Each structure stands twice: as structure tokens, then as C-alpha cells.
Length: 261
Image 1 (cartoon, rainbow, N blue to C red):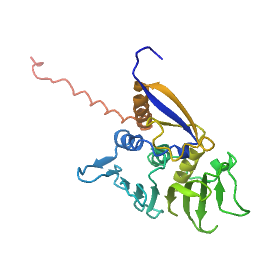
Image 2: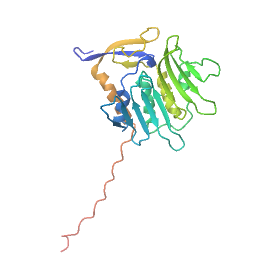
Image 3: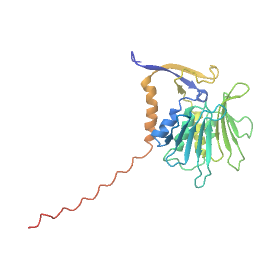
Image 4: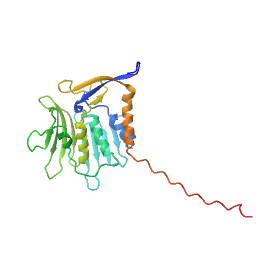
């Protein structure tokens, strides 16, 4: 670390689903700057509203002491009813961002079957009972369940828990009509082994129990911390092709005025 450099103390937390909510700008700023979502401003209300350029999607961040803080709503489209997803206050922003990144992808993958359980099975999450439509993490601090029948789409619940009483830390909910690729984006981010970075010195952690959470604290250059968001914005903006250049107008024929004798 260069001598005299401005640094900040940051924590690298695993598992990431117990890292606390994080900074909402990780979601809101890229949506606005890289994806063209517009935002409303009401200085009298502690909330954020962002709407997609086509006005079909609305993201609401509103502190609610008893409910979900984040709500993503989408209007009906051809072949798909309206849908919504919601996330509790302590849902890590990295997980929610995986959903908004997938939603705003200008070139999403082909509409192939998606299995939100697949990323979790790959890291050894297991079903609590034979035939259960549910998977539990290896440390028992999170589970994903699908409610519904095999023939009908069902609602998805993702819950982080602590303690023998399974006290909820946060919950994410995806209604039955949420595109499965978005639910899978969330579970893939949940399965990601990379630690979550937090610059609040552990204040957002739901627990500091070292048998549950691994916390590595280090000094990082402040410019690097600030630059991570800018890099994220540029990466998302680069997904969109540059607008085609206007064709050159045809060259007008030379005037004959003044050429005759």
C-alpha cells in the first residue's frame, strides 16, 4: 500500500447471504446511468422509484419496518402475465443486482428451460426430505423453496436464517410468473463463493459468530472502492450496441451556374 495513500477499512464477508444489505447504489446507479431507467424524486418521502425506459418495469426501494424493502414490478406482456419480486432489507445488493442485470440484458439468452435449483445443487445444497421442492445450504443458514404443483408455475421463496429457531434474516419472493431466468440469476449469485465487500466495519452483519460468518478486514485504497461502482456502470453500459451512425448524405451535383459562356 503506498505510503500516505487514502485508504478505507473494508470487510470481505462469506457466506455472502449473511453480509448484510450493502449500499443500494450498487443497484440504483447502474440502472439509471447504464440502463436508462428514470427516477422520481420526492424529498418528503424516504424512497426511491426507478422505471424502465419502456415503462413496463418499476423498482421501488422503500424502508418498511415489517415488510419487504425492495419491490420489482413488471406489467403484462404478450404471453406472460404481470409479475413481481420483492426483497427484504438485509438481502445483499449483489443478489438483487443479479436480477436487475438479467432483466436489463439487451441480449438475453434464448428462452430455454431454467432451473433455479441447479446452481445450488452444484455446491451441494440438499433437499431436507425426499421429494421436497426445497434445498437447504450446507451450513443450514439459507433455504430455497418452490410452492406449487409440478404442472403449474409456483412462487419461489429464498430465506436466510440464523439460530436454532430459524430466525429470518431476509427473504426474497418471486411470484409464479417471474421469468425463471431471473430467479436462476438470483440463485446463481447466491451460490457464488466470492465474498461480499462491505465498508461499514461489520455494522450491517446479522451475526459476528465466527462459526457462521467469515470476516476478513483489510485496508483498501479509497479510489479502488469508489472505482468499483464506476467499473460496474461501464461494464453494463457496454452491453448495449452503439447506435448506428447516420449515413452520409448524397453529394449534391455541382451547380452549372456560371459555367456557360
